[in-house]
Amino acid sequence: MALSALGWIIGQPDRAERLLSLTGLSPEALREGLGDPAVLGAVIEFLRAHEPDLIAAAEALGVEPGELAAVAERLIA
Image 1 (spheres, rainbow, N blue to C red):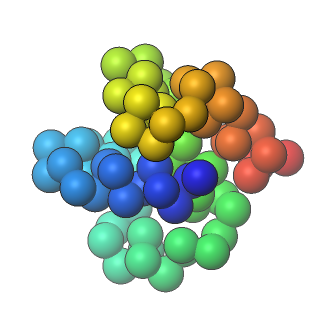
Image 2 (cartoon, rainbow, N blue to C red; image 1 turned 120 degrees about the horizontal axis):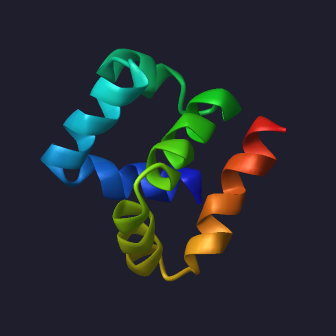
């Protein structure tokens, strides 16, 4: 689900730029970290930090916002 959320973010240049800016990740680090739970957790934390993005992403992915937000807890724990 985190990878799908990342795909949704990347598909929107303004959000993608904000993700990179706020997380400090470079495009290369993001690509290299696709299998890293910490990187994927950072993607979900990015969405959790801005509720309108969380809600929009959840709608686009066909899940409840709480379900998407809970993914970070599983990745980081």
